[in-house]
Figure 1 (cartoon, rainbow, N blue to C red):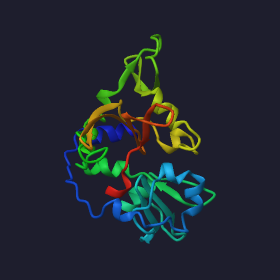
Figure 2: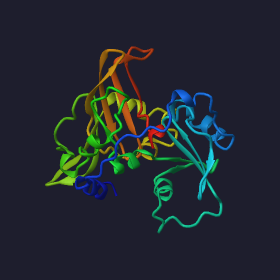
Figure 3: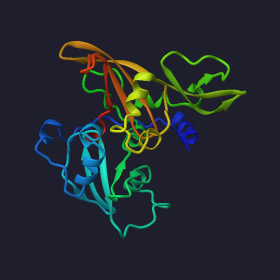
Figure 4: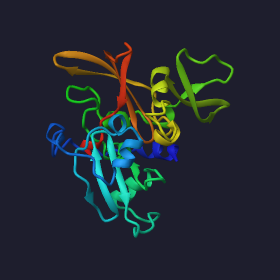
Length: 250
């Protein structure tokens, strides 16, 4: 349950320094494994998973391939019950979203980065924000309060997480992110299944790119996070939105 995870992270002091085993530049020659091609095409893999950063490789529970924005897993038909398993793979698999037609699951890597208190910068080098910074912002006490009788904030969508002292509590999602995560090509299984409930409000930070300061926003959900760059516009002239790069730093 999201609230219990919030309470656990409130007292979690674990911090992990960044350790890069390979770079994205060195991964460009890798290809999507035939094991995952159908899923990749069906789920708009170019936008939702990015480029492969490893080849597919066997684990004790099935085949796994990492991408710049996540990971795909094809379970071994003989794998045992995960209910009592405590290894890292079991934790990843248990939070994954399965596609019944292909048997492939997209694994949720963000919780592992938060559990580890990763000091990897969000948004790339030059960022002022890390995963451990964001984890500190995931707290039951930081849920936004919203009275049902009050008018909604302009251009924000309120997602109710519960009630407190007779008032709805939850998080606001900016309209730009809400529109993006509700696109059929971004959330083919629906935003609640692909992203999960919001874990934070929008968090502003900056990234220095090519000598220029970019004003960024990130919002964390149960299974993924969205990044908005206010200083880089898309073809329609709007601020660019994308999933946070996470697959290559697990």
